[in-house]
Length: 458
Figure 1 (cartoon, rainbow, N blue to C red):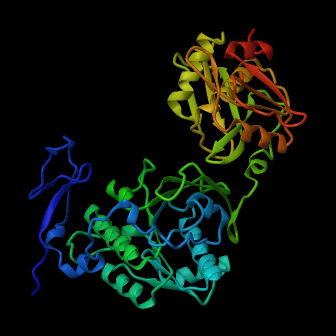
Figure 2: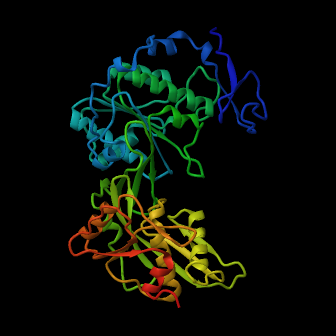
């Protein structure tokens, strides 16, 4: 009978090892973070050493760069977020809420990749049967001779399938269902997820094959499993959106081969996920400039500018502590802006309920949204409509000053392209900004100046 590999306990926060379980980590002082995992020093040499050829130090100038260029997935929005496509040997982690469309996106990517390259793609499903995957493929019209599917959760069996088929791309759906028989713990445990992900990544890099790994998320919206899971992979993609709404957003929170600021927009339809190339028109379809409390923000997502509507509702409160609710904006920053509006802008909001929302389920985290949020709140508080065909760009400081934002030229050009005729911006202090033809710039030095100009302060 084969001897079982020795187990150790490791802190999932800092990685400190211990031969026994500890309540408090002596290294990082975190509580209840020790989990059982495989002692890699006792793993058979064939498990790891066979995948990692011995190397020797060499001068960095002598290192041979990757000769292969990026490989397109066949889906433009996915390629945009990846930085131009998949890099051979890279590991991509795709995470999102249940029912958001992760399996749909990966199956469409597998079909498009196989169709574009003419090479085999292996789709490993651990949560569904092969028959269920085929039903989805028929609905998505993703049936192709080069797309292979296997329902398997054993890590060794998956390795054998990959070595036998030699696919150009492998998709694992999902990493939480895989298990390594060397570990006695159940699939989905911290040790299993870490070891299985490491095994898949090492195999992918040894074969020069890109791999996409689907991961679950927790109730807090973070990737489930050990934090080191995100450190091991090359790219972490987050698939966001309300599953009862049609639009989905794809962002990269980590990308070793490209920018993390790009945004991909998809629309969920009966035939699957459809790319949305002009997302600004989609989010502004129902914009009505005859209402108060609405301001348009040209938000920058990487090199892409997306025009979104920021809505505000200010109303009297029957409570001693008025409610504050914010959707799509940073909570702490929104509270700060309300304080600046009251202290520097002259608005009396302390006894009023304030609600802020970015339409379409978009989340905006950049400070350039400050000015649009402030004008939306002031407009709703005074029931005064903002001027039509106007966008608002700028960061607001604690002193009420309006500061410049990045990518100002791109924001203005995109606004003019969609029919807007003027923009409220910070004072341009030496910036080489060119206003589009027929476009007017209203420059502000501070927030109070802008509120008085549009009669938003009584």
